[in-house]
Length: 351
Image (cartoon, rainbow, N blue to C red; front, top):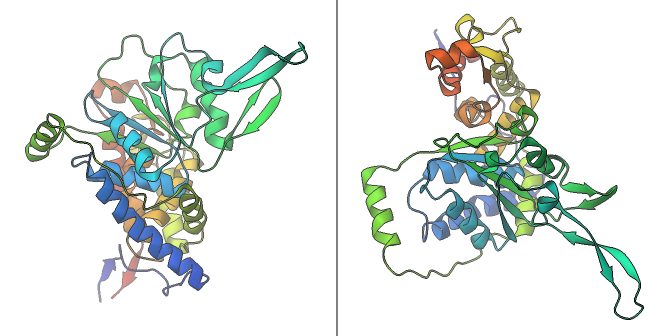
């Protein structure tokens, strides 16, 4: 009897979620996702994989970096998503002169018209929204970029020693233009690591691009249904964490991440030669969480090896730091992720 690689089949016996309410919520999440896609199609043409990764970000409760050339609807996608979900949306245009207080807000001196006394009043910045779009985030210095760190991780901001909690759900989506590098600042590794996905938007196929030109040069004023609320998203985030993960699947996610680190004994030689720093533990966490969300939206209550491997590129491509040799030889992080997936063995089951 030969061994066969197991990808989509459950590794353990099927495990139901804990209650009938959980099962109903899982069905609502699956149906709601399809309804959201239907509403987005009123504005957005194609980009199925990009939209899928954005929705997984929402269901997990993470943040994502979206990279693509100008004109590929990065801003339009996130703004439309906020409209469909009826969430408070805020767009911040990152520029070299943007200050941290322009993002978080600041204390202002105001005079009470009745008493004439002056007092400090907090004026909230654009970070106080449900979906924050940090447009061209790499056009502002690291000091200002770091104003997002606490918000992205803790969902709160601290100003003048006082802490303000952000309303849930809260997400940060950042965009970058990979073409124009003059006048830009690299994102600190600590901030990159807080993005669940690095989502790449490519130019669409001919047919989709034709539909984009046709629909955007005609009159359109769509109205949107609201299939999912902010409260639903918070409930989905809790539900995602209840999805069971078999130990072999969990270990496979960790094996992929550890193999990206040159100092780890499992790192393939050809990968270690091009990597300065491998992925952090957050990579394994997001592989598992993303796998849980992917399983639920596919109508499954278990995470498969394929769920983990399907998310390896968006989870790892911004967490693997290449060295000079890779840059000089044109070795991208996507190429390195391909090699990691080829090198890290899948568990096998006897047939």
